[in-house]
Amino acid sequence: MIVRRATTADAPRMCVTAMRAFVDDPVMRWLYPEDDVYLADGGEVFRPAFGGWVRLGEVWCTEEAAAVAVWIPPGRPEIDFSVDPPPAPPPPDRSARMEILGAIMSEHTPAEPHWYLQLLATHPDWQRQGLGAALMGATFERADDAGLPCYLETETIENVAYYRHHGFEVRSEWDVPDGPHMWGMFRRAS
Image (cartoon, rainbow, N blue to C red):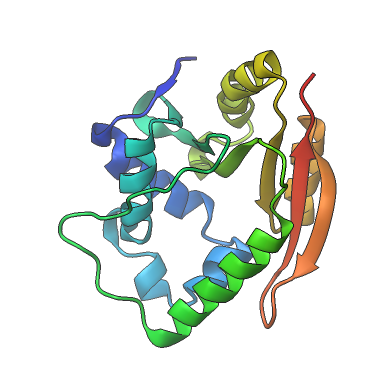
């Protein structure tokens, strides 16, 4: 299996992979409950995010982008999410939910430098084949070499078990007001 840095040419396939992988995700569907918006052709809901993430240079994918991992480096640099054409502005209720989510996630973000796993997605047709583990492994190695931990948030108890299997432990958990329950998970450098 080939794991490589993603390019802008991979973005359309990565958007579809993420949209399909997160179709039942509690946070994504809390933010985008409307099927016509979330399931829009080409994974449009993820287009602005992948545009910014790819420019940051820490998006990793498998061939054909069947699986993708988005890592944010220590220090969490600012990301330019502008895309052309720009997406329509979100409705006020979605903007409010995004602000609530961002604030509560910031409260639980570790203060120490760390690699942040923003997103790990495998297309449903390719799940349970070790692709996610391979994508995490490349950054785990770099984090371990630098003595840095890794951090992520997840929204399902099944994902808590999955990430525990890969060395993460629950560091905190919380309820988003009028939204899903979340876990913050931390992996110490080995």
